[in-house]
Every structure is written in C-alpha cells, then in structure tokens.
Image (cartoon, rainbow, N blue to C red; front, side, top):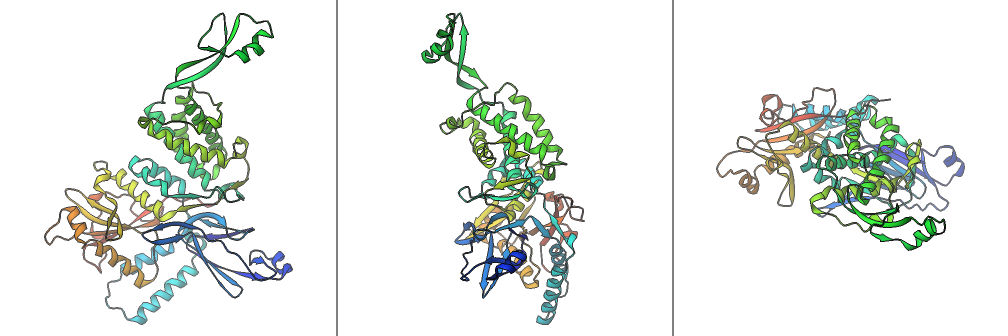
Length: 483
C-alpha cells in the first residue's frame, strides 16, 4: 500500500491498534501495530559540506506520524509493508507568490504586514486549485541535459538506487527509474554510433568444410563431425577483427530492450519524436552486430580510454537488464517491480539551466559559466564570466513563499557577488559591482522567458526593484499533459 505525496507537501497518518479500522481505511492509518512500536525508515540521499539531505522527513508525536516530502522524487519503503511515493509535481502557485513578493516596492514593512502576507500566501497554497499542481516531464529535461557532453558529466549524482532493498510493485506510468535509465543509455549509444563502433578481435567458433582455421576444438569435433561421419568438416575457433565483439553485442541486446520499452510506454514517450529519431540514428550502426551474449563475460571486459563512452554505457546496460530481471517481456506489463530510487530535482533543475545556457549561447563554452564555483564553504550555481558580462547566478528550484525567507535568499545571492574570490575570478579589482540573477521555474505556456541569452538577461523587465543590480527570470519547465 503506497503513501502518495507531491514535492514539498505534508501528510499526517495515524498509528492504530484497531485491526478493523486499519483494514477499512489504510490510507488514513499508517500501520496496525499491537504494541504501538513502529520502525520508520528514512533515506539519506547525500551529504554535502557536512549537511545530510534526506529524501523525506517524518516526526512521530503520540499516535500521529507527520510526513514531509522534500525536493527529491521517487519511491522507497517507509515501513516494512508500506512505501512512500513522491511524484514530480510542483505547485506553481509558489512561483506566483515569489513574483508578488519581489514586485513589492514598499520598504520597511511592519511585522504585522509581513505576518499577514505570509498567512495569506500559506492560505493560497493550501487552497491552490488542482491544476496548480503540474507534473514535470523529467524525461524531456534529462534529454536536454544529456544533449551537452559538458553537462552530461554532472549527472552521476542525480540518481540514487538501492538494488539490495526488496522491490516495490507500482504501475508502469509511476516508474521514473526505467525511462531515466533508458534515455541516458540511448544518448550514450548516440555518441558511440556517431563516433563509430569500436572494432576489436573476438573469437568465432565455426564448423568449416574442407579447411582448418585457428585451433581445432577436439571435443566438439568428435561430437559434431566424427560421430556423424562428417570427416571433411572441422570445428575450429579463430579470431577475427570487426564490430561484432562482446561489448557491441551486449549494447545491442540492451538496445533491443529499450526499443520495446519505448514502444510500449506511451505515458512518457507518446510525443517524443526525439526518441524515435535517436532509435533510427542508432539502429544502422548495429545492423551487423548480433545480440547473443554471455553475461558472465561482461564482468571481465577491459576498456579503451579512446572509447570512454563504452564503460559508462555498459554500466547503464547492467542496470537496465537488472531492472527487467533479464526478461524482455517485462517491458510490456502494466504492473512492474522496481527497486527503491530517488532523483535529485534541484540538481536536475541546475543542470537543465546549464544546458539552456549552452544551447542559447552557442558562441560560449562551459568555461564561461563556472558551474558550482566554490568559495568559503559555499558553491555558486553559476559564475558567468565573458568579455562583456559578469553575473552571479542562482538557480532556485526550491522557491519559498515566506516573505522573510524570499528576501533572505535574495540577499544571500547578493552576498556572493561581494566575495573577494568571486571578484578576482571575474577580473574585478576596483569598485565594479557584479550583477546577480535568480532563475526559477515557471510552467510551460506561462509568460516565462524560455531563452537564456546572456546579453538579454539584465534588462529592466527582469529587475528586482527593491535591490540594486539584482535580477530574476522564470524559465518554463516541460510538463506532462494531464490525462
């Protein structure tokens, strides 16, 4: 039985000893327990700069369990028989509140005015209409990220999978893990196909007629030829140089898995012509490669540094096959079993912004953006430094609705611009000021600016009037159309 939450939302559940009440309303009651003792499981996603980041938090007071989802999406065991599932759905009312706060021109608001604003904002969030929650299309975001090799290198820390934990049964459309792995694998295959498949020596066993090549396999020769009076045939094993190697056969085997998965998963791929184009681009490259492979041999592969994509692609291959239990028919089932997994959405938003920067500014390279520039125990999301523009950028996926917290975030970004290390990095030594920019998510179809062209960011329309040289811009996120 699942406990379903959206990103950054709350839920309260009751611990009960009443078997009948629990049976009749499992959604309300967390668990039936005879002695009142309950073991709750909390997953830690990462530790950065001495701080632990948990996928969700929970507190127990008397018989009430208060659950709060963070900005990680995925699913995990919460108790021994109930799991928690956090959907990639954002309440975009927060974006509207953020816009409203930073448009305030009145200074020195009284504590009462701030409290009234916060209460009203909280009420708006609680009463937000159903369509205010929109599901983020993680797959489109991931494809944008993986389209740039400089950004794709940062994706290793996006995903957490616990293969040792018991699997959880969910519906196919709730599965975020498989499309995530499939898209990442197909993009790696595209890079491999574009560069050209690696050729190498590999062994072939063949029953040759009237000739001998390589070494004779005596045991098989006796069974296949001597016992059957085929004295002109010889079973031989010899090496050839070509594309039909163990690595390429393994990649093709998983490629066939992915094709069938994409064709049967209409929820994420129904409008993704990009995926069809990827498949059509990759397919000819593997036309002369077989798909029969001994999976035990994969463990002993050695990788050529010139073909660095192979090592990463084979790691993803192993995860995909493990995900399907090496059974291709499992790609078509409506109910699936998946290991616990979590995706870091703030990190994904940062990388999505990074990819948009590179896409919208083709004359610039990753070196101009200084992603995660570290200073004094902190890390700036981006420190843009070109001949004409110097900007401190903060990508805010975790928007606040509290008036004081919003302004605290703005002041924090402004503070980064005054650090000597930051000023030295952009070549400032006098009284020059570095402008600051906050980038935050808006729903697709809104008035958000979908372009991040450097020379059009610091305009009056984007200015936060309460601060000097601080700007904001909302970029649209791809959404899944409601069914």
